[in-house]
Image (cartoon, rainbow, N blue to C red):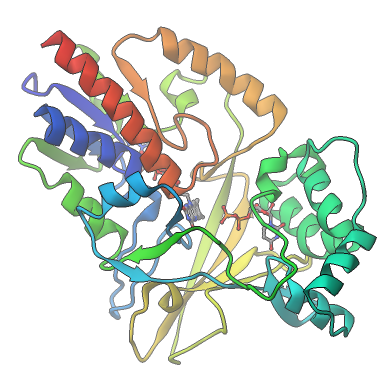
Length: 371
Ligand code: FAD
Ligand code: UDP
C-alpha cells in the first residue's frame, strides 16, 4: 500500500480527472477508490439486461463553453451531437421550457412575433430593487403568473423550500427567450460521449499507474500516513465527521420503467411543475443516448430528504455552514477537497472537470516541488 503517492477518494468525474492528471502528468502512483461498485459517480450509465442504456442517477446532458474541458475529455471519448429539449406539462398541455415564444403563444392563444413577446414579458415582469433569490430572478423576467405555473411548484418539490429561500443562481440557470429556440442549453458545445460516460471514465483511469478499487469506503482505509497526498471528492461534512453539523443536501429516488415501444415521449425530459404530481420529470434515455432499440427505458425522479446527497443546497445559511468546513479544509494538510460534494457547489459536469483540472495543476506542482 505504501507504494501509492496519492489516494483519490471518489471515482466520479472530479476524482477520475485528478487521478488521470497525477498519473499521466506527474507519473504518480495513484490509488483511486469509490464506495460504489462502479466508475463515473453520478454520471454512471450502465446497459440493462435488455440492452437499453440508461443513466442510473438521472439524466446527464453534457454542455459547456469551456474549450479546455472539451479538449481534455476528447482524449478519452468521441462525441455524438445532442441538443437537449424539455417540455413542461402545464395543465395537461406540453409546452417548451425554457419559456419562449412558442410557450407564451400556446398558453395564451396568441400569435406574437419576437418583438411582441418582448413587449408581453415587459408588461408582466415585476420590478425588484435587488435580485437575491430564485423567486426574484424569475418574477423580474416573466412575472408572477408564469413563475407560479413553471417554477414555484417544481422548485418547492425539488428543494423542499420556496424559491424565495434559494440563491438566484438556482432558477437563474433556466433562461427566458423571446424567440422560438427551444433548446434547454445554448452552450457552444453540446454533445454526449459517444459510448457513454462510464466508458469515458474507464479510459481516463485505465493508466498503468492508477489502481482502481471499487466498493471500498474511505473510512475503511483511512490511514492517511500511507499516502503523500489524499484527494477527497465525497461530502466534505462526512470527511470531518459532521463537526459543524450535517450540511443540507437534497436527494432523489429514481423509478425506472421499460416500455415495449420505440418512442415513449416527444422530448428527452418532460417536467412536471404541478405539486399534484409527486415526481419532477420523466426522462426517456434514448433521446440522450441516440440508441436504436425496439424498446425504451424511462425514469421518474421523486424528490426526497433521505438518500444519497445528490444536490448541495445553494442558500445563504448552508453556504455559511459550508464556509466553516472550507476553512477547516484549508488547515488540513495533505488533503485536497474537490468536486460537487467536497466543494458543496451545484456544479455541472464540465464545472466539476474544470475544478479538478485546476486542482490537479496545483497538486502536481506540490508533488514536483516535494520530489
Ligand atoms: P460524484 O459524481 O458525486 O462523485 C463522487 C464519488 O465519491 C461518488 O461516486 C461517491 O460514491 C464517492 N464517495 C463519496 N464518499 C466516499 C467515501 N467516503 N469513500 C469512497 N467513495 C466515496 N451535470 C451536467 O453537466 N449536466 C446534467 O444534465 C446533469 N444532470 C444531473 C442530474 C442529476 C439528477 C444529478 C444529481 C446531477 C446532475 N449533474 C449534471 C451534475 C453532475 O452529476 C455532477 O456535476 C458531477 O457528477 C460531479 O462529479 P463529482 O466527481 O464531483 O461527484
Ligand atoms: N426549475 C423549475 N421548473 C422547471 C425546471 C427547473 O422550477 O421546469 C427550477 C428548479 O428550481 C430546478 C432549477 O430550476 O431545481 C434548475 O433546473 P435544472 O433543470 O437545471 O435542474 P437539474 O437538472 O440540476 O436537476
